Length: 346
Length: 103
Image (cartoon, rainbow over all chains, first blue to last red; front, side):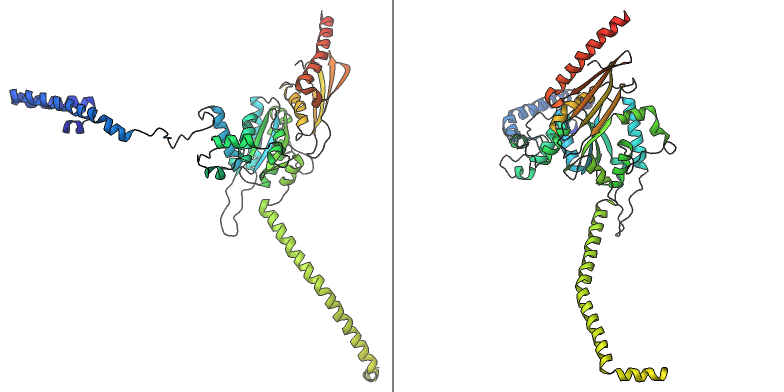
């Protein structure tokens, strides 16, 4: 028994036997017996284990409907590339508030590299975020902005899952699995009305045809968006392309021919569909969401000021009119006083 | 698709309308070096609210002499297969002429 405990491998067993045999050299006959006994005891031990097996295994045996926690049941086989792609895209869609979609028409690898290089360069020139009033510095998202080619069919399915599948609702059901590959997710997107024009899916889904690439921003940052638009989809007044002197790499043949083949078809901002004009508008917001908020606050404050002045205006006017009238009446009532007062001066 | 004889492609579409699909796919089926070989590709996007149909104009030439043939293809009606069929039909005709001139 002790031999079994001490050694878990065959090599150890050999070592034990060797030590037993060294003992046996000193005590000839009984040593052989001990050796014999150890071997028997070990076999006995295994025999006992095997006899006890049904009982012990009965305790160990997993129930028929046991599901390993790391492998919940899925509607489609989870190990396939497509399934994992759906998971990646749902995560991307949930975590990415700002996404631009580009049609890419047969870009070569060299052109992709040139386009990405120019994009990275332009993004790195965006000034890093400034610290807020409470001293907390927002995360610099420059390195998390990616330009990736999408598999449109899988992206379409992932979009449906994000749009029509309510995971919290599904988790309350009896079967309880609410991950993106679950059967409840599958049934939800099968039952969904995908043609309803009020849903974001129905608005955006026509874009997912043909070759589509997505530029993903982890936060809605108009400064970064504007920098990316200046490279990928320049338009003269608001988003001018970098000048040849400032950025000669942009005018390289590979970069230029790659950029000509990229077509900004639309975007998804905070879950809503935007066309290229809408995207450009978002890029023009100064200071991002905080900028918009401060604009609203300013508007409301100035509106309040306007209201008070407007309300005050009438009473002030009335008071002024009465006051001037009073002074006129005063003058009429005792003009002599004034004359008297005036006389010595003249 | 035979793209050798196409000299100019003009498109105008609203990407948010499902009928623009075949026009977009036609753009993606042009070869990677199309612009380097002198093809003019002009794409105009319509705003999301516009209900205008997608426009696809294709111009041809043979032996760098303007053939003058100009096609206006309705992507919504033809579909991508129909567009390619129409373009190829004329391209094959031009190919035949070019071969005759060559030989």
